[in-house]
Image (tube, rainbow, N blue to C red):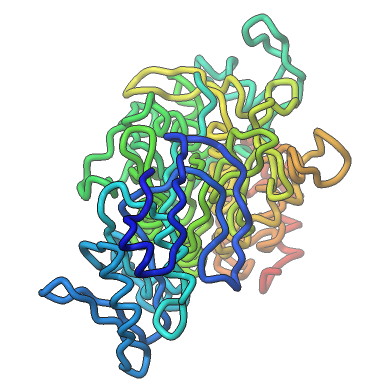
Length: 515
């Protein structure tokens, strides 16, 4: 990247030091210092033409028709030095931050999203230096300044009656061979136990924030309108080797339909939100995609993406999603010991590491204390294109198993907001690396069956419609489900694959207000 011009350096007192970065990489990031105006970041990949500025409440920055700048604090007092500094940087435009306007104004204010503006720099500018210079004199107008990170997909190169189910060790590992190597029986997400209780609900929308999603036959009928953030249109076909489609298949491919494969949540709807151009894109666009999806009803967000730069704008967007009852699941990243990627490294996000068919951690799976849990991510079979299937590797492939499990939990415990289900998921994990929480697998491999069961129990055993009480409606569900049952048998309260007098007794014993 180019440095600031000598005149600009002199005007703002910034050091003129060249910074060169790879086109895309997984270098170690630094934690956000919430007390600083700009996050300390390592040399990594950022957009050279953008700086995001978070103004203080009531303050404003605007570019006037003559190209000069008007910077004022919350009391309306002008800041002439800041206006001069903005001009010296050669800024060509100042607009509202991001490309999506949040529909929930109150949540946007609470998260601080309404206070961001975006400054366009001349091509070739050192955006990091510009952000540091603006942050150095942050005072009554600017609260924070940051460059915009560039990242991309987190892929690492390349019993229902579904014909391909036998090859899906991630759902049920019987020790089947992959490329001549036998797996470890039981090294899976325990999907069949989860399906006994839930196969997902059409009221749940899972947003796949990625390089686009093709309308694959496994879930095309359950896709809802999406958005292409970088292009500003509704064209959301896949642009990166089937990456987003593969993730969507793991989450939502139809199961037990006699064709293809099975996903985790067979009935949920998929919202494709394109936040990359090709295989790379800006943290700003991921943030805007999260806001767009949340505003249109998505409650589970899958971000199988990795970035090296921490941006508060993205973190504020995640806060917005959480304030509206949504949860963000992200790939831990494929940097191995280099550390957990953005946004997975933040505590607000469910960070997912990868495992192979033998419950071993692949060398590429990110290591760090921010890892929450792990799921199969190596040689995972899922949807590609509109009717094909393929194997992919990476923490990108692991994250959708967690997103799909949370979607199943929402069906089992509809009274819970999605973020409130995460503790049940983590507590249900199975240790596979070392005893207790560890930096490679977090709490361990997810157990979808145990997680769905825990969510159902917490919501009140017998409250089958999620209305907060066990009553005549629930009794009707039990009586209507009487007899042997298999998939989505919510009325089987003791998990013995039948609805009978035992379940009726449990329901009567819990009559009244749910837990």
